[in-house]
Length: 172
Ligand code: K1U
Ligand code: ZN
Image (cartoon, rainbow, N blue to C red; front, side):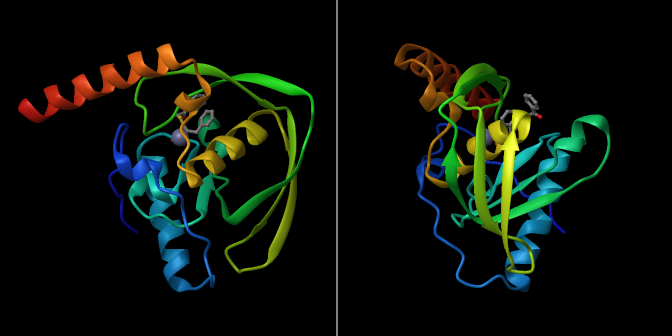
């Protein structure tokens, strides 16, 4: 397993639309293992493959990570097949948008279909943090960051700040 570097905004590779996985094989299982290792190393609760530069429709999550437990999950080719009209606002963060947190409003409950690591079709009903995190990670698969849900003014200010911080890091 390898810890891979996580891309940060405004890296253009984060805007890519990820491609569906054709076959769930050992290469995909190795990618999932690397993604989980990279997510744990960065203290995150979710990660999409595109965040480590692999534009495939794969994401991982571990919501127990915040309680110091390990309950890894992997979602391949996930699709939202139903979303509630009721919405919920939750504070979101993103490993690709370091140190920025803001509220995003999304459907409160969703039903998703996906393939597991064995390539078996699964259905999941989610609310709360699971629904929020799943929608956030699925946005990554379409090149969308949580910043894209904020006002244009907020987004511009945050992207300026991140660009400045990147330039300072490069010259240090
Ligand atoms: O980069 C990512 O996509 C992972 C992201 C997932 C996420 C967290 C919170 C709401 C939606 C999606 C993170 O893991 S950010 C870091 C983090 O651990 C965290 C931040 C805020 C609340 C809870 C956890
Ligand atoms: Zn994210």
